[in-house]
Each structure stands twice: as C-alpha cells, then as structure tokens.
Image (tube, rainbow, N blue to C red; front, side):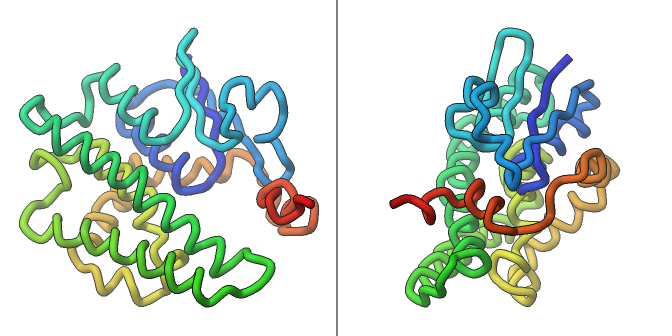
Length: 224
C-alpha cells in the first residue's frame, strides 16, 4: 500500500486530491510541522528537504508534490494528457512548481508570519504571486482546463494553491481572476476534492503558533 506523508498545506492537498480521484489505497501518515516531525532523522531519510508531502511506493520514494503527481499519473495512466501535449504538461507543471508555489509561499510568509513587516518583501511576493495566477487565468480564458482539453494533474497542481488565493493575496483577488476561480470552484465541488480536504480531520495537528512552532517552521529566524 502507498504511504502518503502529509500535512494540510497546499502541496500535500494536491497529492491527496489525486489519490482520491484515482481511488488508490493509501496510508495517510501525518507530518506535523509545528511539532517538528519534518526534522526527525527517520523522516529526513525519506525527504532530505524536510517538507511534506512524501510518497513511498514499495522501494520507491518520491518527494515534492509535483514530482509525486507526475509519478502517480505515469504509474496509473490516469489524469494525464496524451503524448501530443507532453510539452504543455511539463511546461505548466513546472510553471506551478517553480513559480506559483514559491511566490505564494513567500507571500504568505511575509504577510502573515514574518517577525517584522517588510513592505518591500510583501510587495514583491504579492506582485509575483498575482502575476503567476494571472497567467493561469489568461490560459483558462480560451480553454476549460490547463492542458490537453481534459482534467489533469496540472489542474490538480494549480488547485492546491489557487484555492488559497484569499489567504495568499487577499479576499477579493480570486474574484478578479474569473477563469481561474471557475476551475477552482469546479474542482472543489468534486467528491474526491471533498474527501481530500477532509484528510485534515484524520489527525489533530498542532494549531498554536508558539515559539516552539516558529522554531520548527521558520528555523532561519533563529539562526545566530
């Protein structure tokens, strides 16, 4: 059985969505970032980047959410565009991996968690996150899904972050991206997405952002 190491962040939710959509059996293993599970040696042996998610499939270990989506898509043959769209598949999946996710994550950090407000950092990361979401929105202006005319792992990857745009950028922004909002709303309404989001109820993750949690989540802030 697949072992899925997860938390409730946007990247693990992409993988949870695929697992539920594909009807795969898996063991969900929580990685509580605020208690420091990601820094335990046994977890870092699987994922040296000390983040979630990680997937273990027998002897195969895959970390990084977009790599896991690609692995599972190729393993199962599900939610993959046909070979004629291989270029688009890789381009848009990596666009989300290298742009949407990192800029969104930094926007969240500097808007909500940084120990001091740095207006220039907030402005830069909000600008870049919004620019990347606008590119997705423009892509969806003339086609229903991001790649190949069918629901795919690329849409799942986008959904993981785009559904959190109100937290990333502000409550009003998703409504200003109508094509992307349509896709987010459509995916969120799917039964598999509802099951994926319910994974949060399987484990009582720590909710307090106390000093111990900040040390585990943001160790750079405590380096000498």
